[in-house]
Amino acid sequence: MLEGTVASLPYVVVDGASREIEPISRYLRDLLLGDVSPLTCRSYGHDLLRWFRLLWAVGVGWEQATEAETATLVGWLRSAPNPQRQCRRMDALATGTVNPKTGKPTLGAGYASRTIAHNLSVVYGFYAFHLHFGRGPVINPVPDSRSRRRALAHVSPIEPARPHRRARLRPKVPARQPRAIPDSQWEELFAAMRCIRDRALLACYVSSGARASELLGVQLGDVEWTKGQLWVISKGTRLRQAVPVSPEALAYLAGYLEEAGLPAGGDPVRRTRRGEPRPLSYWAARRILPRRRAQERDPAPVSGPYRLRDCPGRPHPGRSGALRERPSRMRDRRRLAAAARHGRPAGLGPTDLAGRQGPRPSVRRRPGRRPRPPGT
Image 1 (cartoon, rainbow, N blue to C red):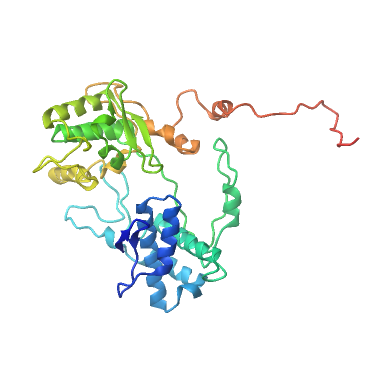
Image 2 (spheres, helix red, strand yellow):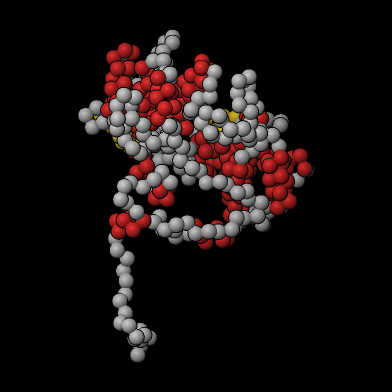
């Protein structure tokens, strides 16, 4: 996987001889024309590279691939160890164990079910694209589930999801549960932050529910102090949206700006502390929590900023009810079923949600009489 030299192809997938794989490049260009993120093209490129490596190993061209090769891919992913699961620290928890402090299970040594399902979806879309133009095999090598497509078609957000059968070779993907952090661990985590910059960043994480990459791109003009909100560029829609934050988060942010000074025009608010001030990257912000864990030799309640996005808002230590009870970004979720996992507000049930959508038209019939057929 190499970075592309043109804007129409941000990433290029090459073979062992550093030659571009043209079928993959055509598919990635089509994805980019569909207004997807360049990082999505990168993720799809890695999955397709894994698929092509398997085809090269079994000696089958991508035009002659069948369901047998798909079964080989699934079998290999379910049994092969994941190189990213290798523990590089001596005090790190072993793969597949449970964190004794948080009760959260660590990832297993192999590939997760979501990774396998994502790889199958990418390969299915790759062959569906080429089949549209008359290239590749006549039958998609990745099995499809018609029951799933019928169940997901014309689904109302206020109705429960209809059950459907999984396609062949598809793994069972467990439903994600909302993350939470106890009050005692939240106070411990907040007290372990060494500088006011980290405290301001942590408070904004929990009170806004925004992504880490979105908060790190906030500039000085994106902060509305009187309204208590920040303007961020959404990762999914790439639109400028407002997210409310707690008064404590703005107070820590003001203290950080008074200590570090105002950023230059066009630069993000959060910057590095060592050397020449530079915009704080995601990987530098991600190291804040593991650094706290390394200092105390204790499993951290939260392993990264992405773990804080769906955590419910916590009051600031020493103050009760300062933060909102639920992430403000819940209003941006398109499906009400996703919001229901985080708990409904008091007094709001399914009937109330249905009432907000408007009453359904109903036909009142008299008892004992049947409706007449048309034309009589």
